[in-house]
Length: 456
Image 1 (cartoon, rainbow, N blue to C red):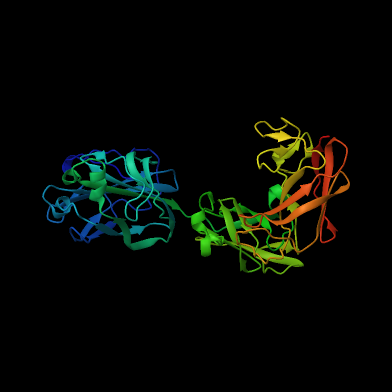
Image 2: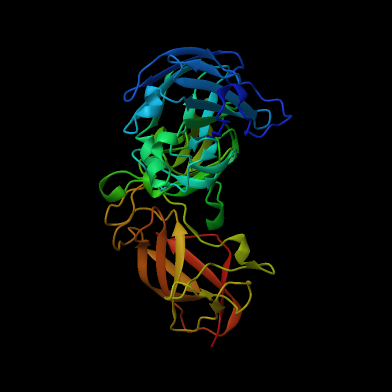
């Protein structure tokens, strides 16, 4: 959200919010009722106003209020709220204040509240630089999408809101005068608090058009418990978002989230673990209890509704090794293989710009990565970060250039969710730029066509 400073004269306010000719959706309608309920120290009052750029003085002359609306295309807008104190009023005079502002306003449509900016102003100048955190507020920034100057931008608030009256929206600002003092400004002169909310119209209910296993690991049309899958379609999420450590839960944050940005997925009626969300793609890990041996429904749910089930065949395992398209060199799809330094790749030197590489030779140990290889003997379930080493429950064999290789480690990658690591010793074979890499799991040969370049 954002806010901006007004001129020190309430009757002659400046208009620092950038104007645009774009016609917006009018999510908070101009002229619609707004009720302000500032509470706690230093003052408590209630003011019935309307959403308007015309300043209104309330609280016996102590406070001036006005608003501004800035469309962001046809489906979104910033709604900016200004609160300016006047000389001698209790809000202006109490530098030990803790503020707790609530509003009643009406939304004309179902929306996502997806950005917020808060700004404290002294006679038209935003206070700054700010520290990254005060009370419950975070995310100090010198810039934001709508207004110049220091602010607290995107301080963790977001979510879906229905159309209609929204009662008691809480805009908390704890001890704002301490910000002013920290900025080297006399707190008695700080006289404006501005906050802005960005709303985006909710889209239609989600629709699934395809489900595959992770595209960089084979992109198979079938999936398995614990495998990573990609769901494609429309209206699957609000904005692109990748999970962060703050989304994890449990002891030491070991458990992955089952929802992200308001989007959740079920496979076979069980909650999947959500790593990435966007309007057109969602990446999840299949939960461990999904029945295998036949079709199961995949369903995406957002704040706007639930998709129709999309049927996908579930196998016991659906293994695939990491081999992205960037490793397809002149029609040869190389598998991703790392040396023990964790930096150098087993590739023809210089074959991919900016990627350190050299040819492995017989006796070298290289590390391959995979998904969908099934259970491990240590019982680590899908959705949990692997801690320490583990071992595959099903036997794995790997061959390079037609010769079976020694697999010194086959289990989940420590520190990851659902990512398998295989340490493989290159067998004694002749040098070649295209040694076939094949593998079988539980006695079943897999079908990826992968290669390694081998030196001597």
